[in-house]
Image (cartoon, rainbow, N blue to C red):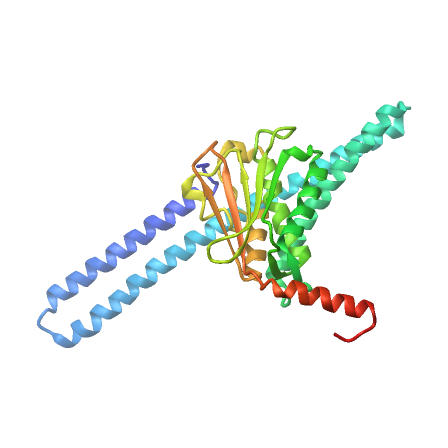
Length: 321
């Protein structure tokens, strides 16, 4: 685990808390020994001391959490600064090159492609930041509708393949035979599923013709509509599995620190899935052994698909269903 700049502050806060708790316990024991015959002082002193000890412990916990949160926010700001500055500097360099000297048409088209890719990267970073703020602050959800999870997965898969310039075989898409209907926002679910697939590509060593991930859409034993993304990348240590969905959190290993990102992707996934009444889970056998993320959403009755088609046809014909 990497050593943060605030690690000494965390250690100091914990040591101070331990010393204060130890002092409070010592004073309480001394009080009991000196006043063991006095019932009233004991009845009042012991609960008060316990409350003081509990207060010191809670204050220490909150202080440590605040220090860690500030450290994560600093890391986020550094990551965002890099994510914004790098593509801007790249675009500026190519524009200056095109402006200052004549460039062959073939090279010019290559520059245009690079600048477009950098623009997409810049736009993606901005959208992630805006989406994170929107998810945590908005009082209402986007327009909710009845969606077939298979169609959403197909659409997002095609978009991710195109975005990363991958061959169709790079993502193995497995869909169940019958519709899996969910009540949700197409925009939000597309963002969540796209983040899962982008992460699988980002943290996988293979990015070309071979399959970088497997995407499955199925119904589990409890009837929930599930989307599962399995990659063959760097994996996640067990101790980090429960923390990877926190805002700004990034697994502290060298391979991750060299990878572009803001620490918001999985936080957005969890927030969106929860807003849709579902849950997200992560599994991994350890570093360099891949990861599996599974989003489970409440499934709607299949009868809604037929009624929705009927209503849509009736509206097209100008008839009230």
